Length: 213
Image 1: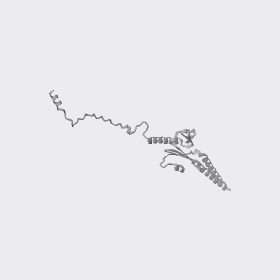
Image 2: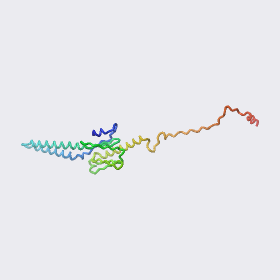
Image 3: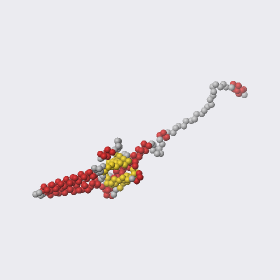
Image 4: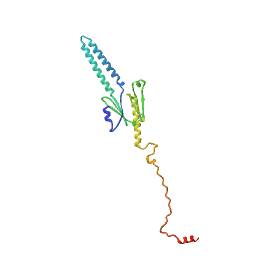
């Protein structure tokens, strides 16, 4: 992973996926480097069978090898021109070799992740993805390696970030909190009995009349 991307990470930010361009992006550099190496070998073998002035063939072969090495190094630099990572909350992309530019997209702003791949690209394992955000903004990356894995990682990170945000806001929609789920037990109302005053004396006259009847 590029050091510019490492510097842009927040403390404790977790990387979910790390990707780069497909090898076909620099296939022309690799192809011409191989052609020059083969030409250098042919020239060296031909010079070995020459009895005179064979040093010129060796010098020519050495020059071809140097040019092939330079082309291969340029191809490697171009291959690392674009690198990107998917973290738990962001998509970060680095572009450039000497002049560096960084692109950061928060995952909560991404609404759709589109995927494009031709038949030939499917055979060699490359393709294109598009991050469509709110308001119709679009950010695309072409000729990347394993585009389906990149899309899957972005979608999974978006879903995980949404679930985490829902948990931080509170209980999920439609689910009662534990306090609401506990129904208080109804206590029977106490029957009020008439209080008998201890200071009042019973009417003895009424008692005696009732007993005579």
